[in-house]
Image 1 (spheres, rainbow, N blue to C red):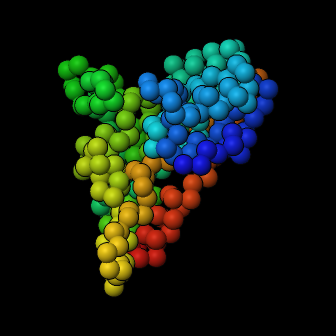
Image 2: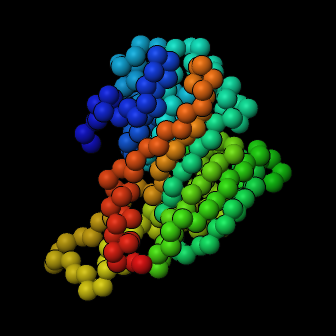
Length: 239
């Protein structure tokens, strides 16, 4: 995978904070193996004291806040703690679902090794709002607004509604194949069909927070190419 230049990812920057459009397949922080390139390392090469203020799953693209100094990191961390930061994700989900201000309020338990489960007894409070944005024959584009920030929160909350994110095999989401939506689609002999997206269809679309001077700011992260291509194909062949 070609590693992008950090400067090309920047959506917003001032003396204290940076917001980037994180590419998919790049970890936010050092993974245990330590070999792979990650956003934290790229950020530190760009600005010595850089710290990542929150995480996105490796496969998730979109808006990620990075602090350039300890004061800014503290400020953003406090905003997260007080639930003053608003995040909006877009996801393409399996099936047609009419979510109209649907609140999923199911506690999540982290069982370790990158796995979580819903547990009313032992889980930590987790809340997500869902709103359907666009309908296709076999899929729906939804807006997801997490109130809390648990691991895999959006993914598992959607799975509980039988609305898994397309391509999210961990939560029973199926990859999107062109042959399934395009009539008379033929592959050449001995050719293996690849999914339209090589990851699950989740993108951190927008983040709203306060800068160090107290002024609120909203940053939009444009869809990456794979997400945009998926939506264009669904519009063309599945609407």
